[in-house]
Length: 342
Image 1: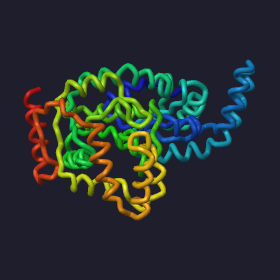
Image 2: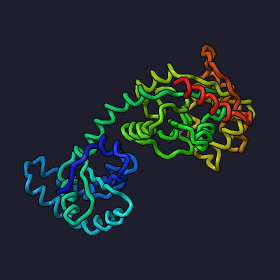
Image 3: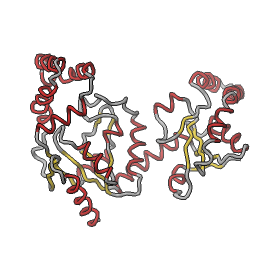
Image 4: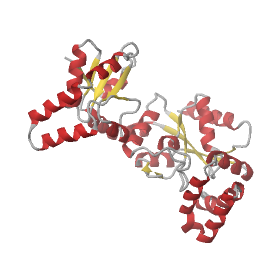
């Protein structure tokens, strides 16, 4: 018989390596899953709907029989895929939605075939309860060095360079697949679900580190929301003002947003019409069509972004120029000061 394991025990054991295998449908997996898990569906969406209908109608035995029939047709593929994982992991942990038949049946069969199979207790639902409970606790135990600054000052690039220097970083915009403004979807993949974002945030913080560099964000990033506990923590954390000369900002924004994607730029910039007026939007759209991106970016910086995100009343203990060659060195030094004070 397979062993049942709790998620918190799984991630707490540093001696054993593991991989999580999500046996739910591809659609369920795409919507939300445990980060870094492998999807090996035991049912497809049509089969799941058929079985679910049988359960709702009270035909439990028939539903289980159909589950064995549908799942059995895939068992060779499932076995071969999981067998290839054996040499790389000490534990292969299977989960479904609630730890029911979809994970129990393949776990029992694969364990009987000699594979190191475990079943995640309570499935994804119990994991989600763990995240809801532990994410606020993890945030409260963490400390942040928060980077603020006008649009285009290079905060995202700074976080990437800090990560290269092996500094602890939480990149909220990367986790959210969004650059944090009305135009933040340009060049990004679709945003994850809120539940998936919460999980990614938990994993970013659950590294054994206590102090993290992070970019100052509003509560909403696209259609996703930061937890209230995170917003409270950012407000009380050490805050650094990142500055940059406007021509450098224009170049960074152009490099980040413009890449032979005029159609996307045109369809996105109309979102600003209610803020800067229809006539100006039409003018900026003509600039884009003429590939005069610098004029568009400069106008938006001066007349929209710097006005909207102004922080005139905020006082910063540190102000650093992103244009200076020693910008990263200065930030690393601040981190070391904070670390010593802990």
